[in-house]
Amino acid sequence: MDNRYDIAVVGSGPAGLSAAINGKIRNKRIIVFGSKELSNKVIKAPKVDNYLGFYGITGAEMKKQFKKHIDAMGIKITYERINAIYAMGDYYGLAVNEKMYEARTVILATGIEYTKPLRGEEEFLGKGVGYCATCDAPLYKGKIVTIIGYNKEAEEETNYVSELAEKVYYVPMYRGTYDLKRGNIEVVSDRPIEIQGKDRVTKVVLKEREIITDGVFVLKDSVAPNQLVPGLLVENDHIKVDLNMQTNLSGCFAAGDCTGKPYQYMRAAGQGQVAALNAVSYLDSLK
Image (cartoon, rainbow, N blue to C red; front, side, top):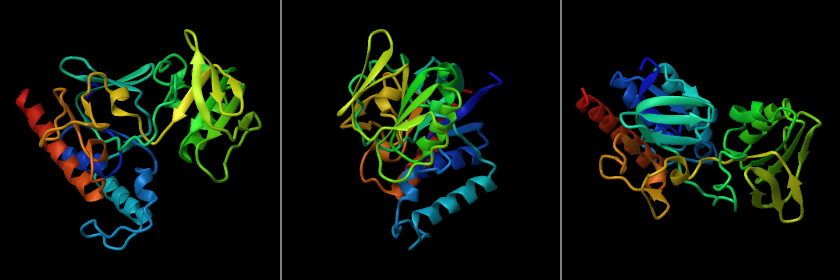
């Protein structure tokens, strides 16, 4: 129980940070899982005109203001990618493979999943397919690993994996230059089609070639919610919530783009606040 958080927030965009701030104000023990950039969507915005009080700023400037706010409140981001969240009765288990975090409530602020899973991705999840390379890299010491990266952050994880693996194939799903530091990393400019294997992953099939591999990391901006939380009700590719941001699972809330359109920062921040306040009410009702 000493290691069990009151609220676990999954996501560090406007919805997740708003939820974290409001949970912290209400004196709840929180943990926030996210990325160093906080939100890849925010930092890419060339200009923001519709966020009250932040007229005409860039997404990068908005990110700096978000970071300043959470730093002032002593809120830290845990840079770990959650692979699965399980309802355990009176708490939730948040799995990072061999590690498990516990929280009495969960707020999902994962953003919207823009990419469909590859063929075989869901079938081999936990059987050679993972979403957190830095978490699972020790499992592939001296082995062959394929990393399919959808953003620049994947390069950092690839560099880490290359220190342990014998060979790393890096398949970038974006254009640009790649900051890859070791000679055992091979960049593969091709389109992945399918992940194959029997009991475990053995191969990645691409449009022009095949890669024999011991493991595959698919590093996306976010993981589809129905992959993340077994039993979670999804409707039209979004998490179904009520006006309290409550999902169909008791003690599990959601906020932001993952709950539907419009995909707006102001809406996400407001929903994050609503989710946090209702999570607090839920916790207080258990006393």
